[in-house]
Image (tube, rainbow, N blue to C red; front, side, top):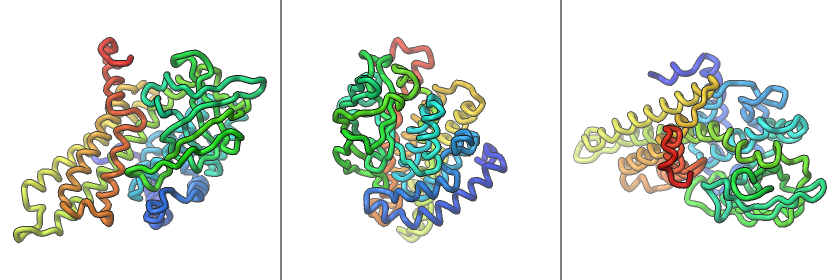
Length: 388
């Protein structure tokens, strides 16, 4: 089944619009962003002007009121820039830092934070992971203590995408006792006294995106910046994970698709022993395996997205798609680099960058191991799952 069988005319028209934007306004800047270790923040204002940053959010808050398929089109085409780091930073803005705000925010909070986020006027990040706490979100230690009309926040967050550039950090804090019932969400503006970027982190891939350590040192945050009620933060995060993980799927299989295209092009023009290497079974079988796995990943993701759009619970299906797409992309990228031989390790070839970038997708938005735990739990086998 061709992907156009999944999308309607409005999605196909939107794809052409996004593709033109990506090729005209992002692709020419990718080399510079990769070299600088970050994107140009002004690109978010441009995407906001085009209505790309709030596709599924209500129109009254700057969104487009579109379905999830429209977001999938956006994610797929954004990846065609070849800058997975920038795609990740955009995904944080659209599908990680803002869903809980859209779902649980008060009208005033949405007016102050969501509307400018959709316009690209305020860049957002989400701060969950800490130096000693990652997959076990319920164990986070950053503490927010209520003091009159303010919370005083103390702690450190690690591996935060958009951390050096964000205007607002959607921050997971502990307001109560141990466990998930003690977790809350605070919207912390980065000009708040006591907030600082500890350091910008140097990483293996995703160089067109910044990643940071954030420090909260008696950071004084207004009480009205609490998202929902105290103790509801864990549940708010879980409700947004389907979108986040589907976005991760799209980035993973889109990267794999680009790698396939690069490998096929190279195999058709590279000659060894008197013929193009596509003529050797060792190579053309790898191509066949790659295209099959990519199609399988897309179908899993599209199925989960269709369920989500229909309002059907799809926690298991999303985790299955996330697990398969991220691990599949690793396999495809490995084959693509192998087909390129020594050239696959050269920075002038796209597969080199994609190979470095893709590993994150088996870790971020819930590791592959966490996805397996979720799948087993959804099967009713929770008593056999570690840590549940």
